[in-house]
Image (tube, rainbow, N blue to C red):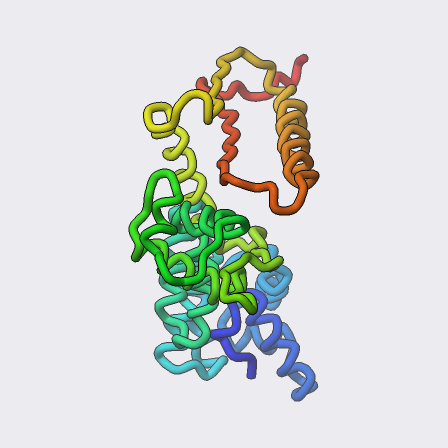
Length: 280
């Protein structure tokens, strides 16, 4: 029987359950499964193909079929809520509910990945330690390297998280240095965390207007009217700009780094978006 706590996708869980049962019991079919839970077999097929969702009411009969205990049943309902979430706010609430229901040992790794994007300075600390010599002895001094300054406790929490994620290591001299490890940002459950990170860095840009001298920053704005059909072309230009900047960084000689910068790009509509004119 698949362990439900290994899943963040109830459709994948049901599909693996079906595959396992079919291998053991030749009579087990979509029609048989549908009869057990009061659904047409065509609905079962579409759910397992991720072509439709079940409601909380529709998932309840599966609790008995899957022989779930009370805690597991609550987790299954939470999986359905998470699967049906349509915006970042819902994703955040339902994902955090899933974490609270998972056994500690199975939720800790996901929580650490989730937390990485919750504070701007976790990401900044990793880049800072690429050149700043730190040996785990003065977290106050480490925090004072960032702008805005963070406390010693905040710096210590960030370093511990980076170590736990394998994104930092301690070399033979006792220095804390970044590893090559990276987090995939493609996971659905990371969406609200990444949006939180983006909100924080956008706020930092706003604060920089007053807190950072002009010679150390570059902030510009452009308001324009645009044919919406050119949106993808503008996005491509922004993408090429980001890639060019990354190329500049990649070409820097090793050991030349002496600062951490944040680059944000925002391109947003300021008016109601007109529907496409099919008569054009």
